[in-house]
Image (tube, rainbow, N blue to C red; front, top):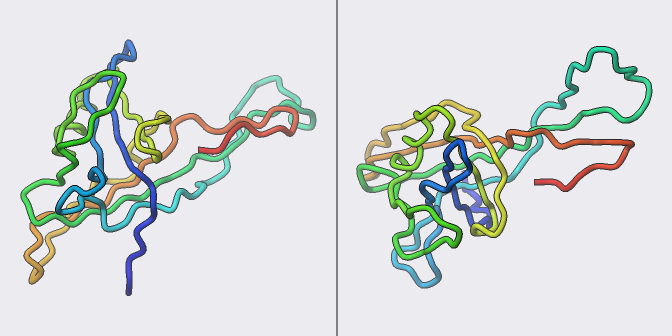
Length: 170
């Protein structure tokens, strides 16, 4: 079985409750960075189950309805280190501190009010999201790999459809 690496330029960022960036993590290395740092699998972005919010008193036979899907992004890493590493050389404008350990970034989420954002275009635009799956660590034997990690990120706010016109996708 081959694993297809999608071409997303993945960046994760945490913010506090007032929207101030705390940390960011580039899953892909800078051009020419050796060795190239990237997940073994990233994507594809896929829609999850369709949601229709409960709105008491709303006539569901007429527009506007608030419906949509939560988009999911699966990412898997294998690292020959004791942690999942990110790029040390890339810089993200707009504040925050670059961390090269995925664990350092995810630990921000244990503070009430902090939240996670994901970018698939190198930090040009972000979407608020959450960790949708369990964070699964897998011990890979016989391959000199110390950490295997698979996690799914999902868009937090569902896409809105108002009057039959959909807003932008992920």
